[in-house]
Image (cartoon, rainbow, N blue to C red; front, side, top):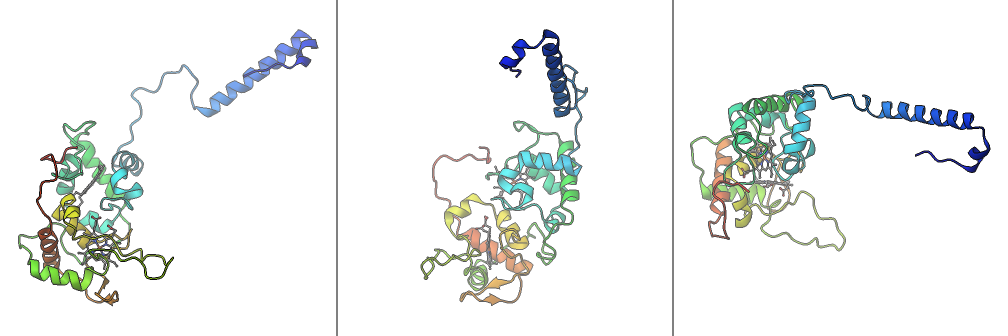
Length: 272
Ligand code: HEC
Ligand code: HEC
């Protein structure tokens, strides 16, 4: 905005218009610096597209589609962190592709391909998976899983054995009810997490979600993976990790606590 003060009124006209021209010239330089093209010039055609196989393109699509549930930068979200090279290596690309394209049935994990609103092509999903691998190739989480596979083998778990492993290694951090700290004002132990045996919690998550958390842990929140260390009933550290059979038994035990009571209208396929 150009304002005149009274001093301009008794200046000769030529000098007033000269200074006005200067102001206008300066504002053109400013506009030119703010956006890198002059107004009126059409945008390049076609608009430049960054491939989601590159880190910059991948990060943009992650921020737009995944951050809300899996955390900015791939961690510290409600959903499993993906910024974990060991996890990314363990999930076969074909399975990762189906999860991202179709979502996880009966869960809040939406599908992003095909007919989904704003859905992307199969090619973009494949490139996105490449981008995820290159961007997070050297992220933390090495040998947390002790080589246990992401998907379960056919063997079904033993519920009773799972219950005793849970009591021996997990319950101290996942008590059915959290105790209030004895000392007034004492900080609660950040590693004492919510119940994972609550039937209503279990209705929100699939067996695969339980398994992925148990095998790969959550390094972002302090949940150990299969390698431990775990906590015994007295809260002290217990040695020894989990093997594939232990994981199957733990998942079978947790799944047995899930109830199927109706809680209102629910959708079959997990669609919102
Ligand atoms: C609205 C929330 C939400 C959004 C958005 C979302 N997810 Fe998920 N995602 C979930 C939930 C919840 C699960 C766990 C489902 C279950 O119970 O198995 C999940 C599971 C997954 C899994 C399987 C994890 C495992 O090993 O069990 C992958 C892989 C995944 N999401 C990737 C993504 C990617 C990539 C994006 C972005 C393109 C994304 N998700 C966006 C909520 C979301
Ligand atoms: C040192 C404490 C600690 C131990 C031991 C521990 N956990 Fe966890 N666990 C956590 C924390 C912290 C989280 C992340 C916070 C959360 O999800 O509430 C977590 C998350 C989880 C989750 C995912 C919850 C969700 O859906 O987000 C599952 C499932 C789980 N733990 C099961 C187990 C099992 C089974 C064991 C025993 C083999 C175990 N945990 C041992 C601290 C622990």
